[in-house]
Amino acid sequence: MPDLSESNQINHAVQIMQELAVQAASAIMRVYLDPALPVVKFKEDQSPLTLADQLAHEIIVQGLLPLGLPVVSEESEYKPEPAELTRYFLVDPLDGTREFLARNGEFTVNIALIEQGRSVAGVVVVPQNGRIYYAAEGQGAWLQEAGGSLRQLRLQPRSAHQPVRIATSRHHGGGEDALLQAIAQHSEVQRIQRGSSLKIVDIAAGDIDFYPRHAPTMAWDTAAAQAVLDEAGGVMTDLRGHPLRYGQEGNGWHNPEFWVLGLHNQVTLSWLKGLMVRE
Image (cartoon, rainbow, N blue to C red; front, side, top):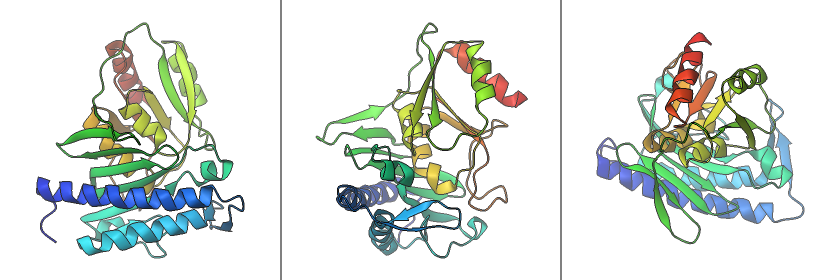
């Protein structure tokens, strides 16, 4: 395959990623609407694996292989160490399986292109409503609605008088309560529960301001949405304030704890960044 570092080749890859994510989303919805909703098995970490996970995995992996780069999926039986890879696709075929089983619609299909540990392109599709979030480095972040309308995502500062909208997970609390209480001493807080990578793309879209994640996550949970967030003007960092990178810290496919920041009012943003350093 030609060098994907060239912008036209990255754009071609993003187009293929979108097509495959939409196909996977259609397969997921066929299972979602099946009243039997089969759970195939539980994995070693006790997370559920459904027929939808498997169908989406096959569609995406088989579709990406002709592009000539390694493909690492959450559902791959064998995953190389990230240190062995420089440029590859990173896939979560069904992010939010618990949300899928709960039938609340808060699940996504995530496909990212990683180069030297950076997420340089990403596609996030929401199967239930058909939204497609996508971005490529230097090309902006975009949201395409199911009806076809397209808008660029670009975060703008909000009024200092508006509350800080903070996303939390429905199923994976991880010690953020003390942090939220500290923020509430400084600003009014609106707590919003979201599943899957929706928490990150909702920040990119300007619907949420802050998402602290202190519970475990994996690279495929976040990489695609991070590409969208970065191009929209948001920030995703570890607790030292360093941009989140993949496979660079000797942790395999595990992410460190991280914070996701949109642009709130500048006073609150500066305060949060100062708190991050103290963390």
